[in-house]
Amino acid sequence: MQTRKLGNSDLSITRVGYGAWAIGGSGWQYAWGSQDDSDSIAAIHRSLELGVNWIDTAAVYGLGHSEEVVARALKSWSGPRPYVFTKCGLRWDAKGEVEKVLSAGSIRAEVEDSLRRLSVDVIDLYQIHWPPDPDSGALEEGWCTLANLQREGKVRWIGVSNFNVEQLRRAQAIAPLTSLQPRYSLVHPEIEDEILPYCLRQGIGVVVYIPQWHRVS
Image (cartoon, rainbow, N blue to C red; front, side, top):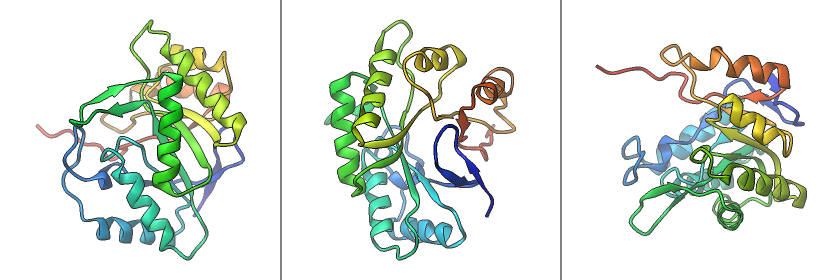
């Protein structure tokens, strides 16, 4: 399977990865419906057998469950270890209500939780899942925290998801961006106008999500 260097990193990733949103299962705000964990693990193994070398998950997927399923799949996988990407910045309360939180203390708690759930010593790519509300100042605090985590060796590379060009510029003023993860498909080609050209000029890797997205009327 063909690979490409991701942004400014040393990661050479396959052009297709394993997206672990759905395997978080049901019972949370953005669920894709119930899932069988054994089927999810088998699907991860099959994708790795076919040459995929990275898995993209997030703390909020299934309120931690997706990361736990990924860990179980990797524990029972005997082949080369794939890169593991995950995300921060969406926290949930005891009722499962999700909110954006990008404070330093929150992100530091999140990375420790993700390391534990994933059963890894370091996260290969750590990403801010969604930008904060405009003018909150949380973007700078959150991105500074990711840069510090990278220097401390808890994460190897850092990126963002769902940022626009202005937000990318604000982050770049603090620390280099390895990647952007935007929504992109034939139905949602909006990033072609400004975001993709900007990332190309700046050497920011782009890993898109739900490229198969279709509109149901």
